[in-house]
Length: 433
Image 1 (cartoon, rainbow, N blue to C red):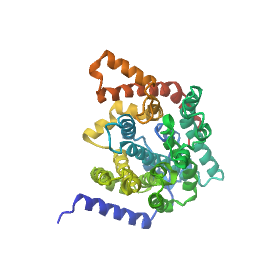
Image 2 (cartoon, helix red, strand yellow):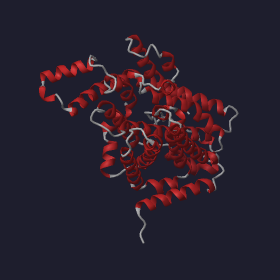
Image 3 (cartoon, rainbow, N blue to C red):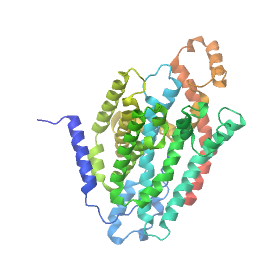
Image 4 (cartoon, rainbow, N blue to C red):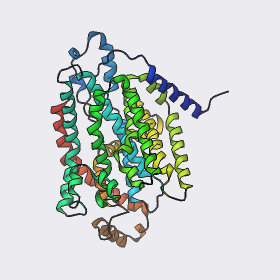
């Protein structure tokens, strides 16, 4: 009897888990680096040409060529970034009309993508540097310098701007913001932070950056999959504990340990990409995994809506895991390369550009407008009312309203990219892996 699609997916995942425990790993791998592949942006054209064959044993030349392809530029991931940030923007701007957890899904996809990209870089960097006496020092120094160059300038510029303009609650919570601890503030006080409440996910990212580099360097390569599986299970159990103990849903949403299943799945994907390419081919050469994961996610969302309370065991415990699995298959498929209309969408110049500036889009979108906290006297609201007075047909049109906010946000993010981020990013060339 032919197997069904869920049975095919389940069989592949069962074989994969067995493979991760018992696969006979080669004694050494050699990798070339393609530059820092950070939270929202990959500069992957940098270091491949600078790789020295003297770093690689003669018996590993063929594996070096394979690694070069492994760390090559994955163009469709810019399109995935665009999808993720678009989900967040729509959720925050159109919350009055939207009841689906699109924003949480977008953030979850970003977390999985970040776990994939930084783990891919860190593991390949470790393979090159672990045997050197100063390997750990160079490994950590290079990673943190490049992350600082990419992430800090826009983040602290936006904080400075908001503090100068005295936009609440920036001055009142400045220490939390400067230390990338806004998620801890939100979890502790169980209240959002207005115009900067979306900074919680950036705080989670930075806190993960404090853990992952050293963890991946210390843990032997063959134990990385088990470590990530335990991280995934632990994160889900932690969320269930918070739910069972009647903690506010906000704690399970923003606290870093409750987000680690997303990063763990991204890291597991990176491990497969680097060392188990045959499993990448089996899992991602078609879109069955994406379709099945999307179906499961939709079922869980529908199931969550059957509860009387909007925040329930499904939304608090299982939603992020299901979204992470969806992100796992979406990113893996995009890394291999979608075909057909999805390829056109992800590789479209518009999608790729918006994915490239997605960090700026995320930073600025809450400053432009947020349904939950933007006051009626906000400049963007006043301008929108003037536009609707001049063109009454625009009034009540959520499509025009959405594109109005999108236009302002894209303009701000573009200015940030060309005037601030891109020039500073050029400094990373001095600190290549």
